[in-house]
Amino acid sequence: MCTWPGTDKKMQDYHDTEWGTPLHDDRRLFEFLILDAFQAGLSWKTILHRRAGFAQSFANFNAQKVAAFTEDDVEKLMQDTRIIRNRLKIKASITNAQAFLKIQKEFGSFDSFIWQFTNHQTIDHKLKSPEDTPVTSPESDAMSKALIKHGFKFVGSTICYAFMQASGMINDHILSCPRHKAVAVPNRA
Image (cartoon, rainbow, N blue to C red; front, side, top):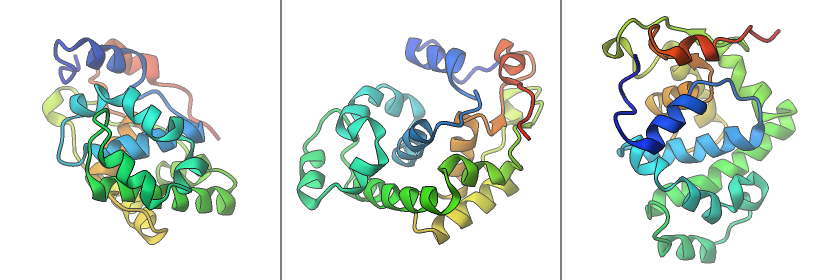
């Protein structure tokens, strides 16, 4: 059974309805890019409990709108108690939105670009216990390097691995977890 949600209701709901479900919607993928970047050095619980605030503060994760944020917007976000007020992460979100839009233009969608790192399939690690869960992989290493090459910030391999778990590129639900089988979908061609 996956133990990381603990007894926190939001964490349990997130685990039971979202985490590990394959995502192919660019807006949702952008959302996880922002949230996972803000998670660096913090717990997922901290971010999840501020998710609604992040959505409101970051234009409902509309990459085009975030890409157009100005220094005035950065200053407003630095005063916004609904989010993590870290100037570097806020600025990185704007930079990442701009890079995200360039990738959409070049590859047709961010989805097409990002899923290439798992050959457009979900990698199932078939984990037997929570202790078996890795924090990086060759795929997250490659994703991190490619994102950095495209101008992204706060996209180290550990952040990329968390992103891959969240977006269903990797199924790291423990085998005994009911969600393991629920998110195991036939792979896309």
